[in-house]
Image 1 (cartoon, rainbow over the protein chains, first blue to last red):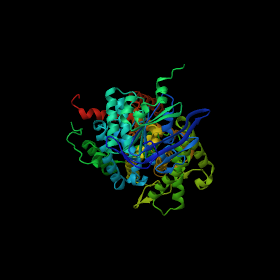
Image 2: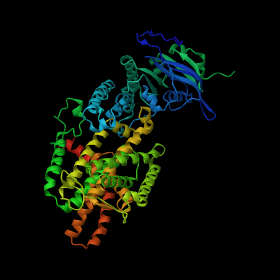
Image 3: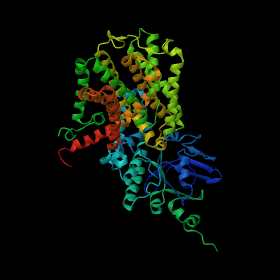
Image 4: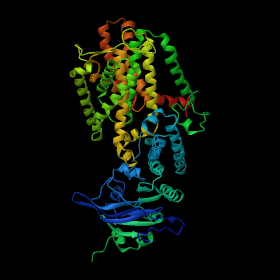
Length: 273
Length: 358
């Protein structure tokens, strides 16, 4: 299962996992003398939930930042949809269909929930400045068509009641959900979630897990997520990459990773004798 | 009682997206438009036009322009006076070079020229933010005023260094020059203001507005969801400068008639328009109107009350005007730091429930 094959396969629970959509090849990222990521390779396949785990400071968020274009790695290549990706600005990466959420929420506080989620439709709304100034006609049609899509996502994430509320007034758990809605509204090829359950209680975590699974199931969204809650990761993901001190120490299905000695050592420590 | 959305069902998204979703609001808006277009022109005289309506209309255009840049896109600008000067001088050069062309087109072209200049001076916004950007735009203010003072080509080598608007007509009516009838320039400015306000509203409620607000609220998050910061910021500078240029062109050609650049478009002008949008409310079209009305009408009102009502000497009244307007600004901002628009919003919020407490 861990080979780089281009074939699809069907998981135990009946979902089809497609060919590789993104591949990281020997990525190395340095900040001055500090090596944040050392020679890491892994792939993300279409339709799967791919987790990246590791202790604090392992380089997980840096890895997501490489994927979303914030950091340009000194060595290594990013392959996306069968093509090598040149160094890109974050907004260009977004326009290619890679959406993400942040560890600490990055919403537009002054705008309503609806406007926040509509902003996610940027890629789909291309009418020009003049069409928008006139509004009637192309711009309005486009707005309404995209609003319909956005309403589906609002329904899906159960945030109908707050759609006109300014985001600044919402509690933390709902903000996380709105951020997810915004990312989902972009209809991304890959959705990157940076600690979607940080700071949540058990119930909220259950809700969020349900949304992630449903998203993957209903829309077939490919998801790469970073999470600290091991129970959640092992339950949700199809495959897991384990990082420690910027190196990859394990990669495979949750059960494979759970029995990997290097992973156990990284998490539980090694006896020095 | 009248002001609520209960029973006012929206059955499609276009209705839900409209500017005034509440029926009462919509009728009030039509009523204001009706009064402005069909009633006021018959009632006004020269004093009302020159003291109140023209400055209010023209400053409203400038305030809407600056609000797009500062309030919606979050880029602070102190160059408004300079950009208004660009609009005025562009209009002057166009009026004198192509006298046969319609003044309406000249005003729009002047806006276009200003948009170009605005984009040029907006380039630093890609690297610098906040106060530092304010200083960079301040440079634009001083440079532009200096340029129009020093290069005689701009004022057609006139001996005084002033520019003065030649007489121009629209549909056979004089809108510029000394021999206008009161309502012609009023209607001219009103039409342009209405167009500008509708355009501004359309831009800010659609995707373009969301891009600007995204940059304002969190530029990194905006970039991560695909907003090109270069395009978003420069388009805000362009649109904003267009409106400010139009305002400058009208300020010169219709309102003042003759202009000396340092006096009419100095740094004071930049601050005045900035105060308008801060007092009116950043990020609100209504706030632009409210702020312009406040700063244009309040001094006139005070003057009438103090000199006309209380019989004070003119110079004492003039001094007290400053004091009172200043005190009012401070009071308003303490009462509601987000401006008159926010006060209005809170009032509407209360009205929706009135007379019930919840």
